Each structure stands twice: as C-alpha cells, then as structure tokens.
Length: 496
Image 1 (spheres, rainbow, N blue to C red):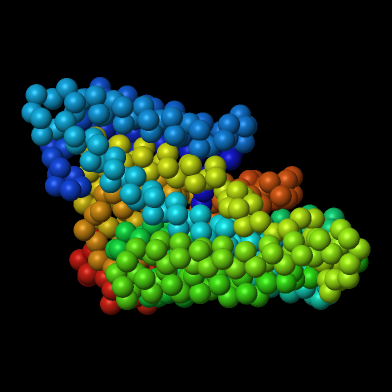
Image 2 (image 1 turned 180 degrees about the vertical axis):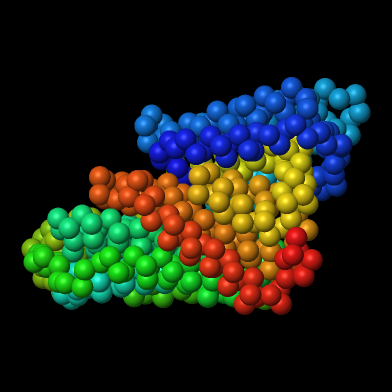
C-alpha cells in the first residue's frame, strides 16, 4: 500500500506504459478553480518532468537495496517539477498565467493537508492502543489457546480481514505475522503460506472500509463515493480473500503446532477507554462528512483532541505512581504493570512514532502527480484508459498496476483525472486498487512489512507460487461486484 522496498523487473514495464503517455499531444485544458492550463505534454518541461519523476520512483522501488528512505527522492522531485512548471508560466506574456502554478500547487497542498492530518490522528490512536497493550493481549490470546495449525491459519486470516478496516493493513499484518511465527516455530512451510493468507486478508479487509486503506480514504475524502456505499464491497472483498484461502488451506496441516512458550500480556489502565475514544473518533469523522458536510478530517482531529485530553489524566496518574515508587510508597499497580512502566505516558511520543517517512512520501507523490496533471499528462492518460479502453477494463488495469507500482500514486492519478464514472465504477477501482497489491508480495505495505519480519521464510518467489490462486480471488471479487452491485452501474459503462 505505502511503498515498494524491493526492485522488480516487472516494474519497468509499468513505468514504460506510463512513459508512453507523453506521445499523445493535448490542447490547453481547464484545471482546478477554472484556471486555463498550457499544454506542456510535448514541451521540454514535460519531458524533463517525466524523467525526474521516473528517476525518483526508481529510487523508491530500490529502497531496500540502496537504503534511501522513499520520501527523500519524491520530495526533491516534486520541488524540481513545480519549479520548472512555474518558470514556464511566469515567462508568459499574458499575466493571467503568472499565478497559475501557485493556484494549482495550493490545490494539491490542500488535498495533502487533509490526508496528512487524518492519517496522523489515526496513527497516533493506533500507537497509543499498542502502548496500552491492546495488540499484545490479542496476540497472547491466540498463542496460548493451543489451536491447531489449520485453525491458526483461518483465525489469523479472519482477524486480519476484520481488524484492517479499522486499523491499517500494515499494523494488522505485522500483528498476525508475529502470531504465525511464534506458533509455527521451525515449520517454515506453514509460516510462509500463512503469511500469504494474512497479506491477502489484510488488503481485502481494507478495501470495503473508508478507513481501511489509503486509497479508500482518498476516494472518500474526494467525495466520489459516500461513506455507507463502501460497505457494498464487503462481499466482493471477502470473496477476494476466501478463494485463495480455501485453496491454500488444503496445504496446511491439521495437526498441533510444536510446543511453544506461553505469553503473558496485560492491558494497561485506560486501554478500553482509548479503544472507545478511537471508535468514537471514527464515528465523528463519518458523521462530520455525512450529516454536517464537513471534511472527515475535522472529526478525526477533534477525536485526537479527546485523546490528548485523556492522556493528561493518564500522565498525571503515572507521575503519582512514579513519585510513590521513588519514595517507597504503596501502589495498587501489579508487578507486571510496574515493570512495564518505564516512564510516565506521553502522548507526544505516540505522535513522534507516526510513520513520518510514509507521510512525507505522500506529500512528494501528491505534488509530483499533481505537477504531471498540470502539464497535461493525466488528461492524456484519462483519454487513453477510460475512453479508449473503457471504464471497466481501465479499472481492472489499475488493480494490476497497483501490484507493481504503489497504489497511492495510481489512485491519486485516477482521482486527478476524474473520469466520468458512475458509483459502481468508482467502487470497482476502489476494490481493484485495494486488493490488486496482493498479487505480488511487494504490491502492498502489508506484504513488504511481513517479508521483512519473516525474512527468508516469506519471500517474493514463495508468494509468486500462489499468484494463480490470488488471481482467481481477484477475478472472482470483480465478478461478484459487477453482479451483486449491478444497480450501481450505467449499463453502457459496464459493457465498455
């Protein structure tokens, strides 16, 4: 979902496909805020911007090998692209063009700001729930129950599917992979196939929720799909996971796992209140958008404010405990709680633990893609894909591209194109962009993270061996959506 950590030759083909867009010239078009844009698709600035973007993205793809964080090249690329665009517009004789670049870049910055603040609030809540021991307790329960290997296979997939719509798929996949590795021990075959199941389940679960994936969040905040409409993707999403899961389950032993050391985990005080506040925050984000017609980020930031206020009382209580322990006083904390209490709770430490590299990567990608759109390439791409190919075929292709190119720039490009599509087609591209990354282990943040955690066990080649089963699930989920939600489609759009 967030990035690609490993170079893959198939990425070259996809990049070349996008590169081919510049050969189609385009007349001047109208952009955001009714600004007239120059056609720069055949200008040297257009060619140079494509070269800068693809060079930066090649560095993103090769992050694992060169150890250059993915946000760095795209941030620099964004600055270079917009500097060239602004120079061309500033050099025009007609003063109406002089502020065009400024207007367009402010439009992109607004989109980034909404996404950034929304994700920052969500990440802070997830980090706080982790600090309070919520995820440790869930992992401990799964490990200590003594389930069979096949039961663990199904339970971890089920939890991954239903947790990822609320938490992000990266956190969910890492949590479930920890369980698999603890249970599997030296049974590498079980660990590998279960990790594939977890990655597919986490990606599928995030596709039917506005909060489950960055792409769904972008679609929701753009306003092309209403909050309640995402949930019609539940059955297509569960089919996407179940088809490969059923096939793979026949290759999982029904025996008991090797004897493992039991885990003990306890919730820190206030954990349930933090979970409640998180659910309340999600409700406020949805309500702000549906009932008050406000951006969802308003509800999320208000909820973050609630968490920060509640953290004040947690910190005060922790400080009192510290003072008692320092002077030999009595405390009601258990020994385990005292051992875990290394320092008083600090909400700003949870803010610091947000995925800042990922957030900055979004900035670079949104500004880069926005710049290419201002040049005219997205209009060309929209005509090539959504008019020449047809909306259904184009949206299926988006899912395939997201397996080798990060789905964030792919989805942002689609949203910037804003092709004329009905609700059914917007839901289709939401589904395909969300689950298409499951086709390859490098196709989503969940897959990349689990490869790092189960290094040498869950691998690119190991995942590739099951691509046929995952592809069956991908095709089946699309068919279920086209059939089950046919009333949301324009008949012409479906047949195209």
